[in-house]
Image (cartoon, rainbow, N blue to C red; front, side, top):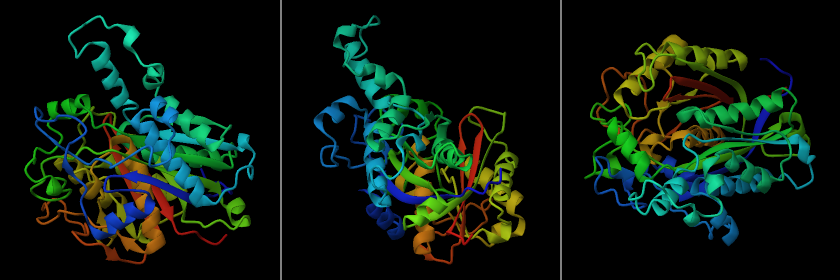
Amino acid sequence: MVNDRRVVITGIGVTAPGGIGTKAFWELLTAGRTATRNITLFDASGFRSRIGAECDFDPAAEGLSPQEIRRMDRAAQFGVVCAREALADSGLEEGAVPPERIGVSIGSAVGCTMGLEQEYVVLSDGGRRWLVDPAYAVQHLYGYMVPSTMACEVAWAAGAEGPVSLISTGCTAGLDAVGNGCQLIWTGRADVVIAGATDAPLSPITAACFDAIKATSPNNDDPAHASRPFDADRDGFVLGEGAAVFVLEEREAARRRGAHIYAEIVGFAGRSNAYHMTGLKPDGREMAEAIRQAMHLGRVDAADIDYINAHGSGTKQNDRHETAAFKRALGRRAYEVPVSSIKSMIGHSLGAIGAIEVAACALAIEHQVVPPTANLHTRDPECDLDYVPLTAREHPIDSVLSVGSGFGGFQTAMVIVRDRAA
């Protein structure tokens, strides 16, 4: 779809491991610091992988009221705090846009996992009772069961009365939710969209699921160096948590009010491999097709791409799959473009990570700096592109490609560019 209405990012809010807020997030990335550590949110002593990327998050310190803290799961709290930061950052004044012209698009892979698991433990008396006693349930348990309540919480915080949705497409949910927000503006259904994603999956049930398929790193003795995308010695990803939310606006309206524009989102596309729940075909054909379509919609050629924000989970099949996809979609240009994975520093926060990576892309354009791939010391011979090891790199950046890959065969690509003249 090519449309005269253009979508820009005017506000960013981030809650990520290693620091709360957009400024702390960017400082961590450009310093190449890792925020992976031993899990403290629950007793992980019985698990194969006992490491994670946790957010040092105090909901009261971040401005949430006691009632909001009681009502909302941790993931919802992340989303609301990020939405408030993004709105403040955008300078969009209350009442400036009719509320029915403001939409919300939030992504999440696992919803209110922490709240649900905590409540199950209470209701089942630590798992000892098959028939649970509902008398012990918290009043807001229904909200934990319905992930769309997280989008509703963001809508209430933003005063949004337009289209509101929760996108749950696994690990591409963040990119997909931002892309859905763009489509609401491109098609004229909204003028402003609060878009992003949130996940707080660091709980025993999630750890057990990934332990079962041995997808997470067992490098428990050295958690700071456990997330090693594209490294020959990598042994799985590190589970994380966090959120990122954006204020997306129709470009001309944003310019008229003098808003600061971080970047423009010009292309978005998704594909499915229809192949396997967790497996990937080595040729990367479906991801390459998503990349080509996103570039076509954005009127961007391979020669225009200046940086690739990789999915870069740190599993061998994923790293090799997307390396093949970059080559297939970009040809020789793939060897010339810097590529990096911020999961090396903040772990993999499932549905939230795509949105957090969009924040990294917008800030890379803003500051003309490519974040590094931390812990990359010995490159996998089958991953032979420029993965920006260890240290951030100053680099001219006008166009960024960001990709995501998720269980179920989801493949998503987005093209983000420096604000361009009409």
